[in-house]
Amino acid sequence: MALTASPITPLTVSSLERLYQQFLLEAKDDYGWTEGAIPFEMLVEVLSAGNLHAIALEDTTKTPAESSVVGFMLYRIEPHNAIEINLVCLEKGLPQKTAVDKLFGYAITHWQTIPNWEVISYAMLGKQTTLIQTLTWYGFKPVGQCVMNLDLTDPLLMPLLIRQKQEKRFTPPDGLHLVQWQPDFVEPVASMIYEAFHTKSDALWDPRFRSEKGALTVIDLITSGRIGDFYPNYSWILAITPSPKTQADFVGFSFLVQADLLTGNIPLIGLIKNDEYRNKGLGKGLLQHAIINVVDGILNGELPMLNVHATVDTDNSQAVKMYRSVYFQETSDYAHAYLTRETAMAFKTGQWVGC
Ligand SMILES: CC(C)(COP(=O)(O)OP(=O)(O)OC[C@H]1O[C@@H](n2cnc3c(N)ncnc32)[C@H](O)[C@@H]1OP(=O)(O)O)[C@@H](O)C(=O)NCCC(=O)NCCS
Image (cartoon, rainbow, N blue to C red; front, side, top):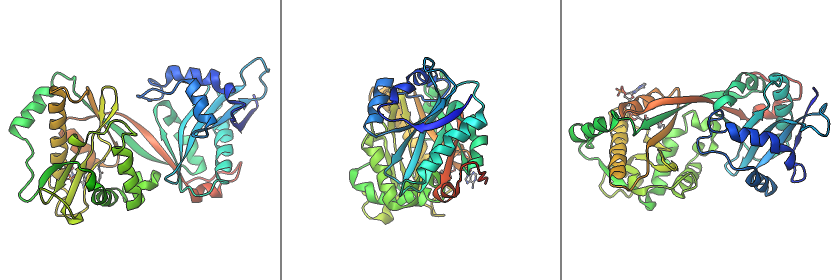
């Protein structure tokens, strides 16, 4: 076996087909792509349009009649100064260290020539997480991520939520109010998102959380429907006045989107970083309020949801406890690996970067 990596061009894209079709069979169960993956014809289109890039790993000892592609990587160059690895797929039985060496050695050397990115980000879903030990050799660092799920089909859950609604329903303390999302909340909420997340692990692999300007693009991503239908009437702001206007009026936020046909997602929830509000049960209350409204929305036929998901950093015990308090359970976890530009630029083929 002799492995070599090279970029996929519109002329060579058909060489990916055999392995990509194999990946499609495993995408949901083995790779954790709950929303499924795009069919090969569509992959050809997005690669040809330059919206996605691919690097193929070939075994050059194979005969022309055999398919020589034994691995591939898909990645995007994101406008928010990140290179996002979407998928690394390696054929079973490959020597992992050699394969990763060729694929990532080529990729990092290539990315060194691309300007204006700050971080390489890789959500290692499903069986890709097994690559983490190898990737630390190139200077990648992992952040633990955990998917929390509220299973609304669990027969024990509905009575619990209904009891919570009747007996322990969250009412904001004196002086605070819950209001539904409005488009003119964008700027103050961007400030809150920046405050709540810029010191969190999320900012290590997503530069958007490092500035208020970046947080504006996060809100745009959520409210534009690009990550699933956005529900303004089920997205909440905790505020000091009943009609918040100035930045000083805003205390907390919680968004709801439709992740797939029957799954809701809370992409972001948080409070401003202020001892007056943190750690006083407001996060739990805001989430409980959001979930009780989701249940009402399901019961009145407005929301098509059997589950609600949220992703949290595994070291964010406050958030994990908050989700558990509303009966979410951890269903899966994975490593989110990131490589800073500085470390990537120091990489030389055949040389260990380490941590
Ligand atoms: C997560 C967050 C919304 C929680 O809000 P909060 O009002 O401060 O938290 P609460 O008072 O509701 O407490 C939630 C749980 O965390 C616990 N907790 C509080 N401080 C903690 C700490 N330093 N370490 C661990 N647990 C802590 C509380 O005891 C409570 O658990 P319990 O129900 O078992 O007692 C808030 O910390 C925040 O905005 N964080 C930044 C953004 C973020 O991480 N969002 C979540 C991921 S999208």
